[in-house]
Image (cartoon, rainbow over all chains, first blue to last red):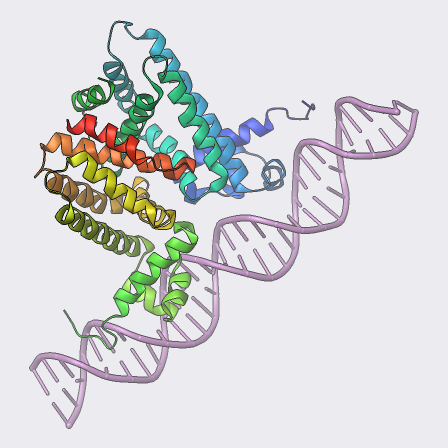
Length: 178
Length: 178
DNA sequence: ATCCCATGTGTACGAGTGTACGCATCGCCG
DNA sequence: CGGCGATGCGTACACTCGTACACATGGGAT
């Protein structure tokens, strides 16, 4: 890694991009808005990230890392005798308990892959990595279905403005996990 | 309904908006791009739809209607003795068989509700309506879970660029439906 | 010590956007 | 039949955006 005058500049820009997306959505993300949030000149953001897609890739990757940490910690803390469904339903409960803001932000980045092929490999990394994590407790196909169901449940909560129902999630995840 | 000089003008604008979103994504949707696609002057789009949100609401509602028709037809055509899981898995298979374009378009409109509260009631209409349809074959909670799993499966296909696996979908939907 | 280049900075330009507004046109209602 | 409001149309303005580019600077290689 080459030394820079401001070695953290790149990271600060990524953090600023995440804050901007959280506050104004991807639609409000621009080189200028990120530059202002990170308190760097416009030229600096265009230098480190030639396109907004590059910036989104970095932001999504960081977002994925954050959630992966939560997931690993949760697994470590969980009662080893508890069922997988209970554990995952509880994880989602904790995920939503801190307000919808964080979930909205992370899902917006994740869902952006729908129309941005450049983001798809990063989204696939996330899905594959999580599936692998769950595969230690169940078979791979079931692991993927658990992820799909969790995504769908989160989506229903976020898109329709409803409330997260942990008992319902536990029941349905349990049917998949068996 | 008040007569207009061009009574279909509003509908044509909505159709044009759907084509624009299909071709360039919501990010490419503007009063001007819609006006060009619908072959009407700029002032006409701003007159009928004061904001882009209004236009998106109309587009999402029409998109929902289209899929609801497919769903009702599928149900009517399905073997009444076949299981619900087989039927839904087959429906998704048909949904993807015509290329990803249509699914991408409809999901983009649907997912737009994440950051646009104005779209959430329309997204909720869709979820509730579909759940009600499925409730004739199973209990309401199971119906909602089936929808959630279908959403999650579609998402994984669309976001990661993977292929739709009908046998896998049938198996996992079956676990929910029992 | 010197040079090269990655990094940092400021500015300018053309393209595209939402919005507003004035005017034209036509159907309806009194 | 006369006017009035809904609808349609074209244009102009202020703003933001991505991009490009010229120049400054300092660290590391030679």
